[in-house]
Structure formats: C-alpha cells, structure tokens
Image (cartoon, rainbow, N blue to C red):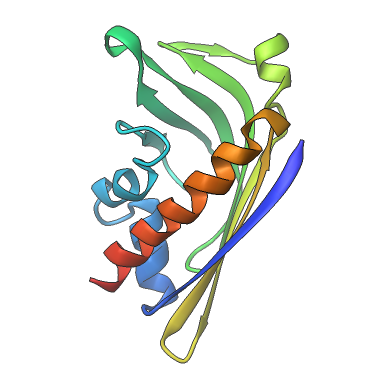
Length: 152
C-alpha cells in the first residue's frame, strides 16, 4: 500500500464542506464529487462511528459493485476515517481472496480545518501501487468539484 495526501482550501465553513462531501443533507452531493471515480458512485449506510458502509457503483449490466468498509472514526465537521475490508459483488460481500488482499486494511482519512472563513480539506488515502497514477489524477479533480459545490 502507498499513502497519498491531497489538500484543497475551500471558501466555506467546515460544516458546509463536510455536509456536501458526505451527502448528509442531500445525498446527491456525495455523488457529484465522487462521479470522477465512477459516474454512478454512491454510498449505502451511515457515517456513524463503527458502522459498516458500502461505497458502490453500477457496473456491467447494472450490477452493483464496490467496497465493503467501516467508519472507524467520525467527528462531525472535523474528521472521518474509513477502513476498507472487502469487495461488494452484487449483494455478496467478499472479505478474503486475492482481489481483497490488494485493498484489505486500506484507510481513507478526511480532515476539515476551518480558519477565517475557509476550510482546508486534507485527504489521506491508502492505495494499491497500481492505482497511484489514477488517484493522483482523479482526487484533485474530485476535490475541485467539492470546492465548487461547497462554494455555490
């Protein structure tokens, strides 16, 4: 695993940015900024600490796929930490095997720091080395979309 870090400064409160990022008051805002990863990107579950959460997308022939994860830490408007531990294939959770081993234990951490009307979002994400170039391209674009929807 390789850990990548991304940052963006957004002219909005931490409450606004985290709400838009997590889709708390309107789930569609989550899909807007994550569409860069997959056009049908969404989540199923809640951001409650300790809860299971699925990060999903529709794949070939409308089949649901994605990641099986757990919200490790959730401090509203300040921090979210997610641990991935499986793959979702339709309605089946796969938590072992070669495909899972590439991602098992991968963490995503989002920190929101507000100062003088701006919020700095810091993202730390673990990834398989095969996805480093893709994440280095897509994450900055996704965060720019988050900035646009948070500032509008």
